[in-house]
Amino acid sequence: MYDPRSMKAEEFICHEEIEETLAYAQAHKNDRALITSIIEKARELKGLSHREASVLLACEEDDLNEQVCQLAEQIKLDFYGNRIVMFAPLYLSNYCVNGCLYCPYHAKNKHIPRKKLTQEEVRAEVIALQDMGHKRLAIEAGEDPVNNPIEYILDCIKTIYSIHHKNGDIRRVNVNIAATTVENYRKLKEAGIGTYILFQETYHKESYEHLHPTGPKHNYAYHTEAMDRAMEGGIDDVGLGVLFGLELYRYEFAGLLMHAEHLEAVHGVGPHTISVPRVKHADDIDPGAFDNSISDDIFTKIIACIRVAVPYTGMIISTRESEAVRAKALRMGISQISGGSRTSVGGYTEEERPHDTEQFDVSDQRTLDEVVKWLMDSGFIPSFCTACYREGRTGDRFMQLCKSRQILNCCHPNALMTLQEYLEDYASPETKAVGEKLIAAELEKIPNDKVRKLTIEHLAAIKEGSRDFRF
Image (spheres, one colour):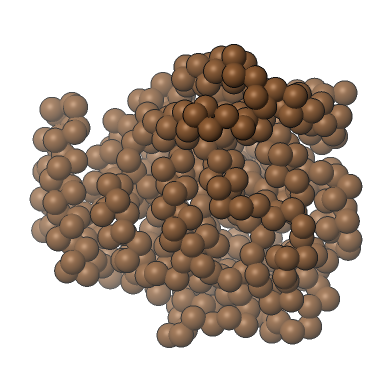
């Protein structure tokens, strides 16, 4: 029985409800009147149910699909403006006891060298990331209670926040580690993390158990109910995601939206972010072994449909995707991207990109500076802002501001100020020239005279050497 308020995984991610939803969407994929009415509802910026959004995903009417894509772009602008938040992943350890069939870190893979960063190596990686210009990290580690206990993760977070190198600071650490206990989530909260991120991989229970044959991750319910434990532990920003290509994408899409509905129903706060990774080639992993892979066109349509269904959420795309796919995805509602990423343990301190400990192949291998310039040339503001987290605008407080679209009043000037920091400290001359023009043009768009005047004063102070202003 489907119940979004239930705390049991198989009731808030109900297989029968998903099957009925997919049948309903298939039956109405050419129902122009119904699809038009759903699009009109989405224009109200209140979101859509998993069933309504599934109809849009199934739609075969080209003109209506185009309307959905245009609406997705507009909704992203309405909620988040033309800002794109920048981050980088930091891989701490690839020791893992799980047997996930799609991940090269699986316990039986004997090809991959196992590595775990010492605190001194963490420090070196963080300085390398600071020297690029990054302010926000997502730390990653395999599940291994001996090699990667929660105490190790907490030590790494403490180290990361302690490093002040030249004008570099990591101001926000998001955490992507395995499902754990309420007590451990409480420890992560006390350590000052930003968002707790956990990908479901697949919401199809039978497929999930097949893909996770051994290790603690095999427990579908424990994994799927992790966000509820995280919120019970005081973490008020959580990030969802599935690994598209493992199961039929329409099933995953419905399950993902049901999970978002569950978080809203139980906690009053939906997912802070939704990520959309796809299965990619890696050591010991051939994406062709999974017969549910999706085309670029379907992939970007999924992104557009998530954006109109969950308008308030941040949407993340990684360097798994090529420059061309990321360019298209940015127009469909993506609000966060990584830049200059390395997916290997200790990869940032290596002059040449190492491949022997990569979790997946990186398709977009441009430097952070190249990505920043590309974004600006494309009409976006690269933002290194972490103000909401540090000003206590998290959880329901962030969502209230986001849903009322008041968050733009803070985020737009904050983005310009953090971009100015980047231009002063890290940018190439070409990137700096483009950025200065962009900031000058964007200042004119700040509607509040007092905020605009203060932003101009802060920008001048940044050029003189001051740092870390925020609204």
